[in-house]
Each structure stands twice: as C-alpha cells, then as structure tokens.
Length: 421
Image (cartoon, rainbow, N blue to C red; front, side, top):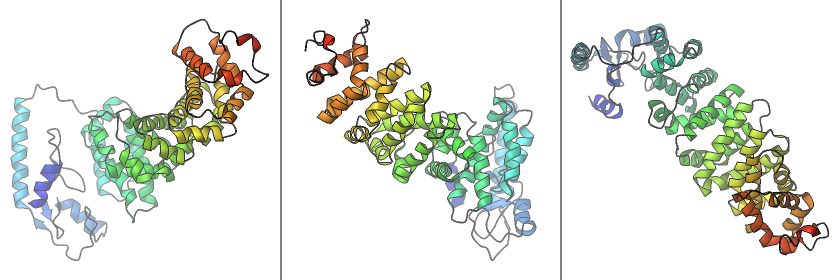
C-alpha cells in the first residue's frame, strides 16, 4: 500500500487512461488479475508469468533486482480498487456521453498494441519503427499517441541509456525513440515538455548529442530547440555537462551537410547565451568564438546572421571580446559581412564593432580596423541618408576614435570636415 500511495502522489489524474498504479508496469494496461512478487511490485499475472517463464528472466522488470523467490501473491486490495474505479468511470461515461473528449484515431488500437509490445518485449527497435511510421501520418496520430501515454513509454527507454548496463540494443532503441519524440509538439505547459525537461531525460539527450548517429544528434538538437522556445531553464544542463555540451552543439553548427541541424544548434546557442553571463563564459571556454569566426566567410545569409548574433552575445563579455580581437581573422570576418550579406547582418556587425571600440580600443585593434576595411564600411554607413540606430552607433564610434584614425594616411581626407575632426 505504501507503493500505491507514492504512485498517487507522483501521477497526475488522467480520466482518459487508467491511473498509473492500476496499470501493469510491463504492458501499461489496466490490470485484471494483479499479483505481487517478492520485490513488492504488482503486475498483471499473465505478463509477469511470461517474463519469468517465456523469456526466462530472473529479475524484477521494474527494479531489475535479481530474484530467488518467484512466488506471485494475488493483490486483492488493488483488484477491489480497480473494480471500483472502473464502475465510477463507467458511470461518468454514461453521464458525459455527449462530452467533447477527443475520439481515438483510426490507428488507436495499433498504437496501443505497439506500446504494449515495447513495454513488455526486450526487443523494442522494430516496434518503435512501426510506431514511428504511424505517428508520421498526421497530427491526429501524434495526439492519439500522446493521449495513450506514449511519451511516458519512450522517455523510459530514453532514460535507460544512462544505466551502466545499457548495451547497443538499448542505444538503438533510444535513437528510434528520439525519431518519434522530435516530431511531437512541445509547449511549456504540455505533458511532453514536462517529461522531456526532467533531468534524466535532458541528460540522456545530451549523451545522444555527443555519441549518437547523425540522425539521433539532429533529433536531439531539434528537441532542445523546441524546448528553448519555452523559456526552459538551462542551468542544470550547463552545470551537469559543462563545456562538453557546448562543444557538441558547436560540432553541429560546423555541420556543412545537414543545414537543419546547424540552424537548430545556432538557435539553441542564442537562447542559452541570452540566459546568463555564466553560459557565455562556458561557451567561450569551449572555443565558440574561434569556431564561429572560421565558419563566417563561407556561410549563407541565414546562417551568417545567426552566427553574428551569437558572436555579438559572446562579445558582451570581456572574455568574448578578447577572443575576437586575438583571432587573426576576427575583425576581418565580422567587417566583411557588413553591407554585403543583409541589413540584419550589417546591423549586428556594427553592434560587434561598437562593443570592441567601446570596451577594447587598443591601438593595435584600431589600426587593424582601418587596415582590414572596417572603418571604410563604417564610413559608407555614415553617408547613408536615412537616420537609424545603426547610423547613430556609427557616429558614436567615430566620435570615440575618429581622431586616432585620421592620423593614418589611408583615412579619406574629404571626410574629415564631414566628421568635424
């Protein structure tokens, strides 16, 4: 009964599906003949007998404890509670027969059968693949899958990768589970988000981000990107994984084959870096500034804009600005994209140059800006007719350092009077 009380506390009420403690841990179906084994866990008699005598297992399926005693004691108390619950639910269904409860999909029975197989069989990969083919049909199938507690089943598989006893079969099942989970809608208040944002689940996904196949890494970063849109608190992930997490994300940013993975990784980085200065320092420590600068010259517009945004966030820290100016191509790479890629890239590029000029204006840096063309680009922006925040920022830059630049022979003389230097 103690186990029963704990289950009641930890499981939210769900009138569309039997309460957790009424379901067999193996099949996740309502128990008809509940029996308790020596570990104190209750199972449906047919399922636990199959586990012991068909699969020749000598462990408790839920706790994985080794067993010496295989006795099964009928749990009459739980059976009475299940019967009472069924009676109450039948009465509710009669009263609420005209309610707006979503109807099961055409594949509901097949979804339920596959989930039961996944829970009861040690060979899960093929069943998950079949389930994936159903989920991909349309949103109705996805919603039915979620209502059938399919997310809980797959998250349990995901968490098994953290066990020391996990093997290649477990790893493959985890990869297939991610194939389904990344397709599901994730909102801050939804059940899917609550399950995937648990510490065990996020740790499992970071493991797949580091060690999984190309497809599994894409699916993991896609889930992280959806979570980032919900204002998810990344503090546990960063504290748990440290710079290894950033290194894994930066590897995906560098992926020139899968543009979707690269784009998702950049979006995740932007949201994480916005959250705190500590996150920025970890990313800088992982070499983010160097990686992004080297990728900038060959990047297309959308990716270039996102990378400049990440660099701008990193340059809000002294360590980030230091890393940029110390890189031989740092200022050159940023300046090259101003007035070349897009208005958004120009605007972000000017912000980066402004941060450097405002907080890191060494003589070497100012000279490099003049030689590599940064000042020329800034002058071109200054001569534009329209008034904008970007142009105002350029004016401030020249007010700070125009007197230094005018001493160089390459500075345009015709602009000295314009700038009142």
